[in-house]
Length: 133
Ligand SMILES: [Zn+2]
Image (cartoon, rainbow, N blue to C red; front, side, top):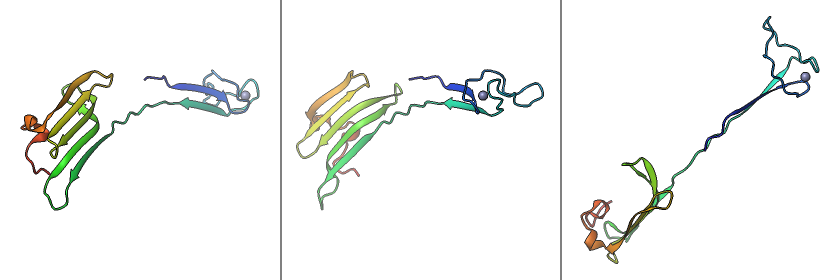
């Protein structure tokens, strides 16, 4: 969203809007024709929009056993090929041999919707090997 910056100049004495140059020919601030004040107040209104993309990456482990048992990612992720952020939910469940992944664009277009046996998914990026960090 783009909102133009707003600038206003008012007399510091009476508060009435001023449109004249802030200085006279001599370089002095011209007195207000209403109240004679040479004080001027500038109001500058700036607006900025910041959007946050949060994500949570969880790993479930069992005491005394190396590696994780369930790993889940929920949140926004940068899609490098396009340069936008996509919403992703991914659950890799080694205990129940399930792989779920759903990826959507910000407008809700589904890019991927997988629910399959993890053993059928092995070899892809996040599903490699039983003992990762
Ligand atoms: Zn004035």
